[in-house]
Image (cartoon, rainbow, N blue to C red; front, top):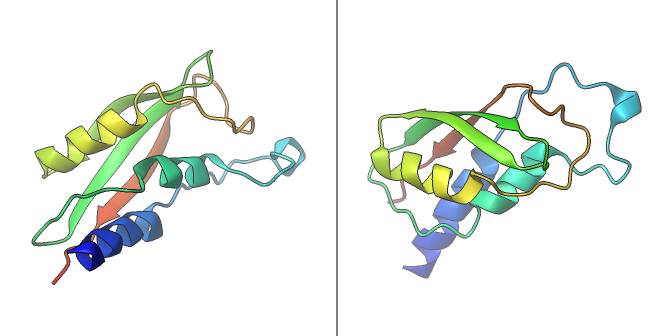
Length: 114
């Protein structure tokens, strides 16, 4: 059972990918920490178990308090939607390289465990 939980956490971490193609290198975080890394950390330690792969697209923005505001989660799994919303919504981020008010999209994939 611990193996399944560990594998599900690793699946979330491995599948989180943020396409910030418009990042400007001169405004990068000096420590190299990105919003994708912070989101990976926030979504880790999951005990979600699924029978088949589940995908979600998470639309979010950053407010003036440097908190993630989840706008929409598009997924066929209501459990995954609620999990993502509860973990990410109004979580404070330390990354300064994101623009407040800009809309971001991140795909999340939870892989099924045998």
